[in-house]
Image (cartoon, rainbow, N blue to C red; front, side, top):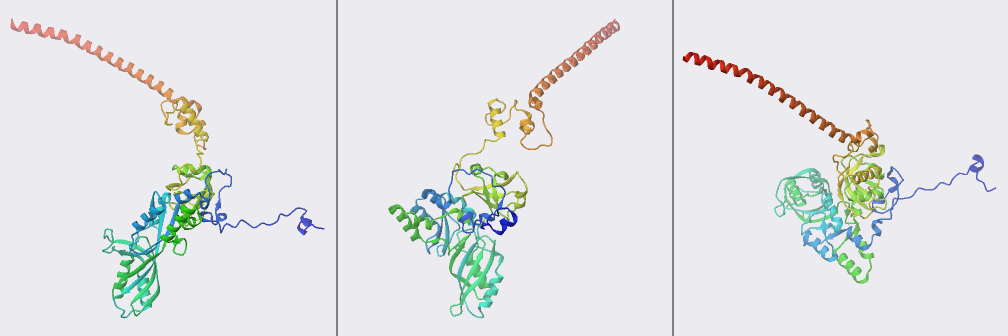
Length: 463
């Protein structure tokens, strides 16, 4: 009575359809984890590390970043030094200098996160600028927009006179200019600029005035985006930093401080991801290449030479790397280096050491113990040739030409042959010397009678 139609018709139990795991709301680097390409699911999870949002407070601050709303008047260096003093950090760094009169997003990296400063300094920026024209004659919103459209793409720029850098002509790319508002009475325009890092908006305003034939200068400027962080997400003020540190130090409450400080994984969400096995994490922290057998999942769009972020299954960033294979190649091969290290982020020994347990490592230890390799594992006179060539019993991958076990004793045989050859050469030299001496003796005996004959002839002539 209670059987379904599928069970009656097929005679088998039909499993219920279950919806897949929704990973679209997972945090940071784990977002849309289920959409990554699966290379393998076989690995042993290790009880090390933790989710970036669940790190202990000391470790959370060691890997933290701040999206600071820089106030007007103090320089970027002053603001960063204040943050360092307030939070008691060992190191701090920022994502790009803002002039004292400019406000807006200033990404401040704390402690270990300062390793990402250089990458963030070259990230794209976005500004809102107020530009004042010296005259409003013949100007309109449409005409200004056409002029701004002309000032897009690669442009020549020379830093302003007040800039603290060498005034050298350079090329900077402006991606988009968009007008928000034009005030005809005060001859002022507010517009948005999306540009490459290192672009001088002050110079752009001067060029805009020259293009319109009326002259212009920058009145006010605010940075609204730096890299992947903008002013609408995770933006905090200096007062927030002071209050959060006071709450944490006096009341031991972490919630406020965790809200204003974000994990460094937040600024890496725009990189292609490669998920690494736990057993390979510490080797990468020591500078090893990421090999294909150590990959669990990888993202689409990985290209040769492109920067990628290596992450653990818990969502922790391990290192930034340069891809040595594309997505298609990683899916097709089972060995080789998938990426090399550009910048290691995670501290060493966060995960335990899992290298040195393979067959070649074990053989290497045995050869060192037998004296066939030196203390550092380098070959010496007793080293088997098969080990140097990685062939014979020391071959752990398929090879075209095999090596016999007898060749392991080749260095000793070569030494014997060389000594025999040297002995043969010595005998040959001795025989040659003997022949030369014999020839010299014969010539000496022949020369003596001739000398006596000449002497007799001279005596006869004198008589």
